[in-house]
Length: 130
Image (cartoon, rainbow, N blue to C red; front, top):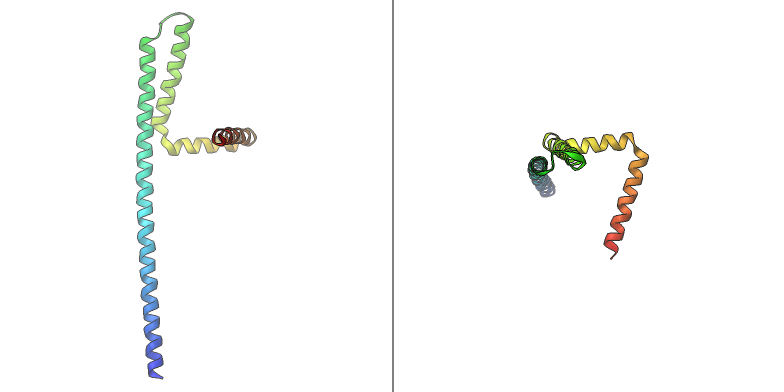
């Protein structure tokens, strides 16, 4: 009987150690995944900020090079203002802010959002079918 109890105790100890090892491995994997996600999020925000700076730079260049008067001047200044606004938005909001804004837009306008999604899906299907 003591051999049986010893074997059972050894098996339980081995199972416990295996369970602890599995938990530690899972915890380590989760930590690494969180680190990767954090790094990816930071890089995405940095890229969004850089894109915003480039858009604002393009707006400034358009203002400098466009005619100052007339219909073309008015149109180019309006485009430059929109570009400048878009660049500031990209810099200030980042990926998270844009995702929140899109979510809110879809929540307020579900039917048009559904049609836009269908349209994008149709275009992608045609694009990849070739």
